Image (cartoon, rainbow, N blue to C red; front, side, top):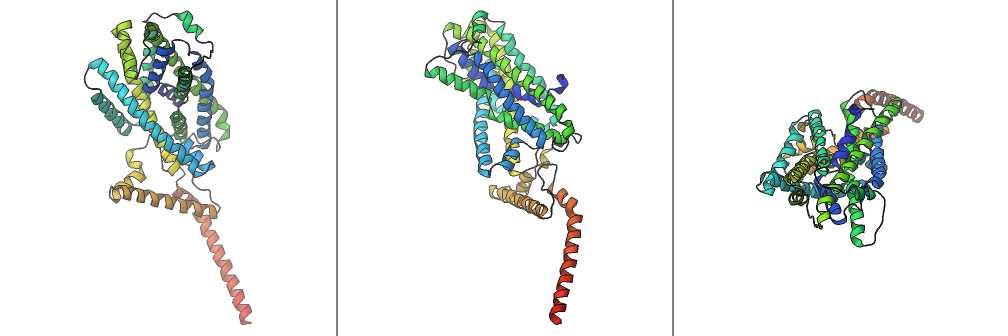
Length: 408
């Protein structure tokens, strides 16, 4: 295993340190100093295993997390979880954009809202117009921005004895301490990362014809599962290491001087300037912008994967936008919301009829994006034709026999 085996897991770990999570780590470091560093290594096995299971399930079935929920649980379970995911991600994306705008204002001056709108336009343009393979390389390069938080810790005076002592688990009374524990758990175990990494692994089976789902090629399972474990463990370890340096940096600057109120990620970037110098604040702010450019596409893609999986839409970040049939058919019908929903309903109804017909005739219903229902019809068509012919012959002979007996 080497660097070439890093991919979805690495991007998932890096996306976990989005601007909102950086704000949470900054608040913890400012108020509690080094006391809660131990939570990072305690939560690491939990988050790594959950991400690993999600990715392995997707790689084995060739379907994302939402599609597997749809296949194995009642519909209301999947729709409820996807709805919660959408609401949470929309709020999180808005918070991250504003944090990026605040960091950009710290670096260049100007209006925070203008920067936030500009970042939104840039992200949407890149996701829609740039080929996914090239965009994925851009995201991997952006992951190097996390080294900025490693660099900042060496520009401030850190009491490493206390910092290392914070690795020992300790529980303290008080609602603020309990709230901080829950906040760290929530930032570490981000639900959208499960949908994002599972969607990425499922898309591998669609993009590369030599990598079918593992249930179809079990001989490839040992190698692929080792790759997923290595990729996931490295990515999530990087996420926790960066969180460690963020907490240490803020604890050594704000926490050491009694500044315990950090409301936003932008405030976390600007607050160390009087204490550690403008260079530290600038590096912190630049890292904030870069992590936002990396994390927001992952959040948006997680929503897309979830919706596509639940509604059985074709999916794939590598596909052009014209390959989105539900969206484009709605636009052709008239562009109104009612027409869009009608077009989606017609597509889903047609898909259900094809699957029901395939089940009645012994065919396997299409369950993966690259198993198009039309392909199932074409594959099973000759067999159904022969069965219909045979049934007609039998029916004809039987009717003839009944008529003969009646007549006799």
